[in-house]
Length: 126
Ligand SMILES: [Zn+2]
Image (cartoon, rainbow, N blue to C red; front, top):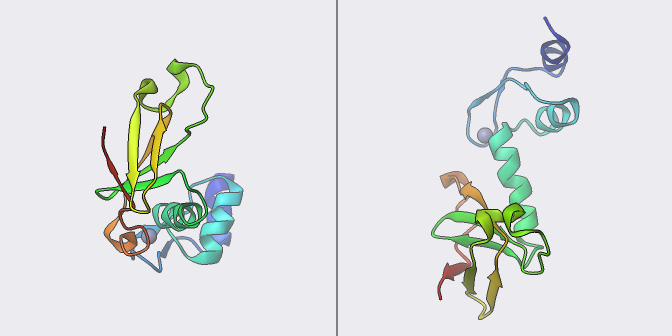
């Protein structure tokens, strides 16, 4: 048994996630293991809980048709290092803003269990 497995066992793994019910085996770095074990969350649900808190405090967090994005409108990164290779996105928010960014990162499809916390807040337009 390696150190990661031993530590996971000490933290009570495997266990079932309190949100989605999937089994979590805690095969991550120490800090992540401890966080997941403390909250009894799987890696995915923990990501979306954290993503929710970012969403409510970050005006460049967008949910479009159930897909999560983070935009960096002030990016100075070289085009090759930008999200989507520097493609320009125009987010039209439900509160009337238009946010244009050539550094946008897709973060995945919001799982069904989180759609009520992360509803669509924008559309993509030109
Ligand atoms: Zn889960």
